[in-house]
Length: 395
Image (tube, rainbow, N blue to C red):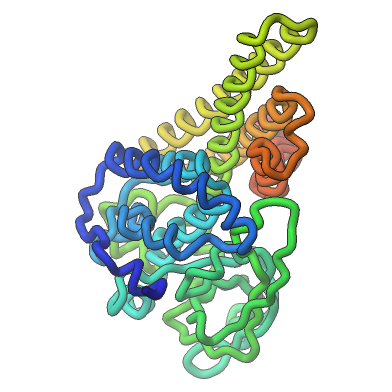
């Protein structure tokens, strides 16, 4: 059975999936994801079976519009689902996060583009390169796009690719977002890395690809929540959200989920050592686990409380300020830092055995350290930006 056939088998088509039902399905998948994690790393891609199971569970529909069969749930549900899946496999959770978030992003394009993406295939998926690269040239009816974009996670499973490029429009230089069909571009097999190996985050290359006008929006429209598609969904607060308010909590929950699992493994190791009898270093190990526990719990609290606050504010139609955005980005980066720190502490609880490739703590460590290099998780950047905004507001 091919990948397309597998994902179309017994797929959920209702838009009434509850958070509890989604999370229960994710928890039930964790043992299978753990079992497949070695294969995911060796093959450097998330297995087609995993993607098919995500489809059948309705995971990819969480942020997709209801009019195309999606659940159109809030961002907190999505983030909790990412964290839960990371208990099993970080690469699978990361790919899920990137692809499922595109359910929101592709809903921001004009209706004609959305019909082109989902009209004949409501299960169509997208992946993204959000940093500007390449160039776009204005031509009659659209743009000619060329360039190379790195770090395109989920490239093995998407039918559409979201690319970002500068363009010289009628009003001057502007950064634009483009939706491009997978068949129009190529991927470079250049993803040889320390961790998150299975994300398939390869570089994409476009060479003189024509993109019609209806498949492009400006980056400003995307970031401000004012893109053409927003008007189609007055009942969807997430779609009208300034993008940066929420995106600090899209892939970063992967690190929180990894920290959850690292803590679970460390506690199991500690119980075994305690049953074997006291040792001189056991108190020091307990303290290390306690410190890590505090960090994991802090990370979880930041995730849940910040997103609950943001979701509530969006639902109430309250104005989102630049201060709200910068605070969220600072908190998201701090959350990731707490999770990363906890994972580093917990890796050594079981002794030197964690250096072996077969030890799950080593894979957790490598995945976390790789994920934490993402710009969205840099506390140095986002902490400094937030404090600068406070100082400017007081001057």
